[in-house]
Length: 168
Ligand SMILES: CC(C)(COP(=O)(O)OP(=O)(O)OC[C@H]1O[C@@H](n2cnc3c(N)ncnc32)[C@H](O)[C@@H]1OP(=O)(O)O)[C@@H](O)C(=O)NCCC(=O)NCCS
Image 1: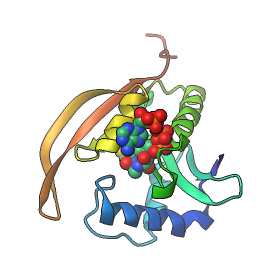
Image 2: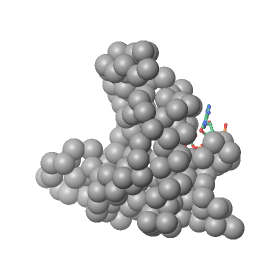
Image 3: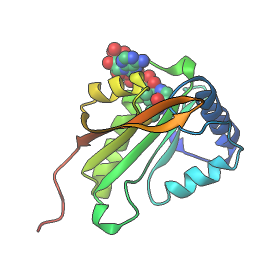
């Protein structure tokens, strides 16, 4: 697998993947398909953090992922939130594990010590993935959203990935 910076040429595959997820599963929150402008919103969200495309050795698109601020306030600078989506045919093959390992090493370089994943409580595969990756559930806000007539909540999962680099 290759991990490269998320470039303009992945605008359409990223949008298509998000729209697959919006229409078929509980991984993305929007109710309706999104236009390609979502790509700019994602890059803006991840400004200053790694945002990457995952490719097979032959260059075919596997998925994308990024770190972004947990809150846009400096006191939370050692905490980052994760977002990633893999194409359905490329799941459960270890790509997600490799991507998370990549983000952990990038995070160490940046002085980030805590990862947060906020996950729809109906997205069992993601909850299982994060448990397996060493995340623990720290909070659950049930029934705070309604999507296509079904209520859902958000589970917060956390992983401490390193020593705090700033001394008190
Ligand atoms: C969540 C996601 C990134 C995981 O990536 P992945 O490449 O499929 O995961 P891996 O193959 O590295 O799986 C590692 C382990 O996580 C667990 N796991 C992963 N997918 C799982 C699933 N569908 N059900 C149960 N456990 C799962 C397993 O323990 C797995 O190890 P195993 O295959 O040896 O049993 C990927 O499935 C995905 O993109 N899903 C849709 C989008 C999404 O939910 N994104 C996260 C939003 S919060």
